[in-house]
Image: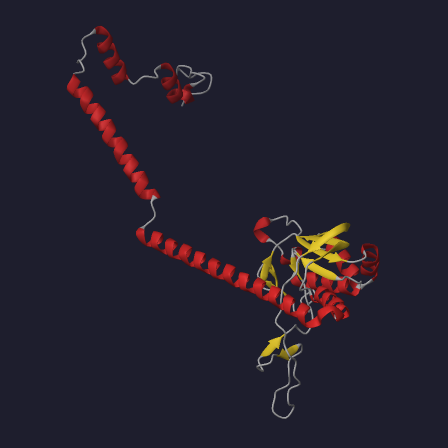
Length: 314
């Protein structure tokens, strides 16, 4: 057994563990290629004929055409996929044309109703016209413009994007509290992300999205309210809606930005469908649910839930 000081083995090179890298660095060319290069330089190597050159060109062209054909075949969708896509595009265009035609009919009917109202009222119906105009503003039928208050609610940023907490998102109950607080504070008209709110508007949730009249909205949520901005801001801070906004900001980190606007433009909803409420017969009909009404045909309509749920789930 040899010792450290009495060993007869030759000393190892400092870079002995890098033999492969040293070989690549010292002899970058393979010995076979080096020998062929030396023969060609000495003139003793095989000469390249026109046949070999033409063969190499044809081989390169064949490989290029094959690679191009394979790429096109992979990028081109299957026939069934193309047929399904064309069918969907045709259906979308058809539905869009039908929606445009129906919207044109609605516009024409609205103009016809306005013209008939003018003919019916005549010159002596100015007071009735003023009352109709005021009611159309409160009902959300016509567009309004004026100063007001703007609230922007933004979802909080989760530390771990893979495990997002639903409590950090703006929920439907939050928008319900804010909207009800604005109405109570004296708002004349309210819209959420451009969706005008009326007495028939429902604010609900569907997964991560919030639905306003079945229109899916996402963060940030911009709530515009036309009215006296100073008065609304003061009344909102005093009411429970202001406390709710403070809780959203401090507890859940949800962004709450409130600003006064000199001019807000809120769109109108157009003509709305009116429903007739009926009192059910206590002897034959079951106990009605909270907020249930019926239309002229007797079909039950749910106008609202029993009340918003708090963020703790109660």
